Each structure stands twice: as structure tokens, then as C-alpha cells.
Length: 160
Length: 282
Image (tube, rainbow over all chains, first blue to last red; front, top):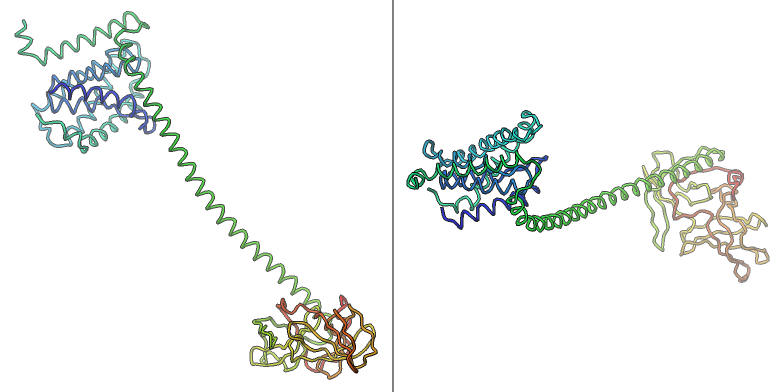
């Protein structure tokens, strides 16, 4: 993966997440753009790029969100790595795969963060989080992933 | 060792990243509430950008809100205009109904006062050119109407039936230049002829120039000629002219505003007697 593209993806993704995303809230639900970006980049550039992208984007999210630093970074790094490994086992050329993966990754990311937050005695129950945050966000991320793939930006990224 | 790391590069990266993240989390978990320099550094870089975007967003939101307000205002104005027009139309209809009601009520009163059985008719059309003045009413021969019958309203005489058709009739009004009715000045009982004058007024011609006329004198039908019974108001003296020879003339203002007549009563032919008591207001 070329470094300028990598920097652009990370800084652009972070910028979009912190500036545009709060504006496109639907019923209090916002997409998690770094998850979508991490999954898409990982599918195209591999596990290493996905892992580093996820880590960098997650770190930026942690810093801006004011939560425990490393929380998003760890969950998104893992997601990026696993997503990058998937093309070895499944065919990812069909658009439904990255879209579905973005949805599943969002759920996994949410569950992973919830598990890590138990270290910090996070009080919210999992059921409520799933129903009100994680699942709606997963749906929203699926739409964002579909839009990103349909958009010319999705085609700018070369395939592996 | 380095070869191993390079050979399994992606796993090395994963391990490095996971260790870094866990280390960060552990550091914060052991020292809760303390900010890390890394978090502060990232936040310092991103904060101004966030602020700028927030301002742009607020500006755009304000602009959008203003546009929506304007759009809603336009819709409200259009709705209120339509409502106002509908209410005005309703008010006009109401006023017209009230006026019609009042007219019909006074006509009914007159009908009760008159001794003979009268025929009510509604004005359908007006012929108001300078040469002839007539009203077309919606009753005719089929309704029992007769030619030359007297036509009245609550104020006095309108005219006479000049043309009779099966279901309609044309009434020659008093002010028609061809109209001529025998009249009497109520105050002096001086008799004369009331003629229509082009322009919508009436002229009274008295046979004796010595008769004294005053503006405001009421002129009623004389009953001579048997077309009109006695005592029906014709008009009031408006202006008295100097005597010419044997005649004295005066300009009369019709007792009835002939331009606004909507409903009329038609007296049967041969009605006689003094009908002045039926017009107490005159």
C-alpha cells in the first residue's frame, strides 16, 4: 500500500468521523466510518494495512472521544487484521461481501469494546447497547459501505 | 530474530499493535483519571479542525433553517390569502342573502297592506339604454299577469306591464321617455301628468300655472285613467321651473330607486280605490 494513500485514508476517515458524521445522525444513531474504512482497506490491501489503518483510526477516535486510549485502536486493529485475511478464504469481489462484512465488523467492534470496557467497570448493560447502539449502527454502516463502493472513491482504490 | 519478524511481518505488526493498545489501556486502568500525552497531542491537532467544521455546520444549519422558515412563511401566506378570499366570498353571500331577506320581508309587508291579491315577480333583466327603460320579470301570461297592470315595490310605482309573454313580461318603468301617468300633488291636490325624462328623472306637468309647487312635495297617482289606482307614490319634487304659458313644470325624483329593483308586485288590472294607506312611509 502506498504511504500517501494510507495517510490520506486515515486522516480523511478521522476528519469525516469527527466533523461530518455528527451531522448525519438519524434518530441519534451515527455511522462508524473508521470501521467501514478499515474493512474496505483491509479487503483491498491485506491484513497488515488493515491492522495499521484500524489502529491509527481507532487511536484518533479514542483521543477525540475522550474515552480510554487504545479501546477503539485495539478493536479496530483486530477487525482490520481479520478482514485483511478473509480474501484468502472467501471471494470478496461481489459487493455484498464488503457490505455484509462492514455490518458484521461493526457488531464485533461494539462487542469487543464492550468487553474491554469491563476493565473500566463500564455500567451500561449489553442488551441495551446492542439494541440502541450497536445494531442500528451496524445497519447504518452497511449503507455507508454500499455508498462508498458505489462512489468513485471506492473504485479509486486498486485491487490486490 | 529480525528475519523471523520480517518473515511473519503481518503477525508482527498485529502483535505490536495489540501490545501497544493493551499497554495504553493498562496504563489508564492503573492510573484512572490521568490524561495521556498521546491523547492530548492528537486532540490538540484535531480540535481546531473540528471547531472550523462545527462553525461551517452551524452556518449551514442556520441558512437551512432560514430557508425552511421562508418556505413555511410563503405557504402560510398563500393559505391565509385563500382563507381570506373564501371568508370574503362567504361574507358577500351572507350580505346578499340578508339584503334579499330584507327586501322580501318589506315586499311581504306591502303585499299584506294592499287590498287586492298581487302577483310577485323577480327581475330577470334590465334594458337601461337612453331610449327605453324597462325591466324583464319572470312572470307572464301563464301566471295570470295582464298587460298594462301596475307594477309596484314598497317605495311606490315602478311602471306598468308593457309587453306580455307566456312566462315573462317587460315592465315599462316610470322614467322611460314614453311613459306618462296621471299624478297629483299630495299637499295641494293639484293634478298633472308625470312623464319620463331621458336621464332617469321624471317631469311633472301641471295644467294651471298658478299652482304652487315646493321642492319635496310628494306626487302620487291620481287614479284617472284606471290603469293605476289612486295614492301610489310616484316621486318627490326636486326642482320647480318657471311657468311657461298655461303650464308649470317640475323635476321629480322617482319614489323608487329603479336601478336597484330586484322583486316587484304586480297589481291586477282594474284595482281601484285609494292605496295611499299601503305606503305609510311616503
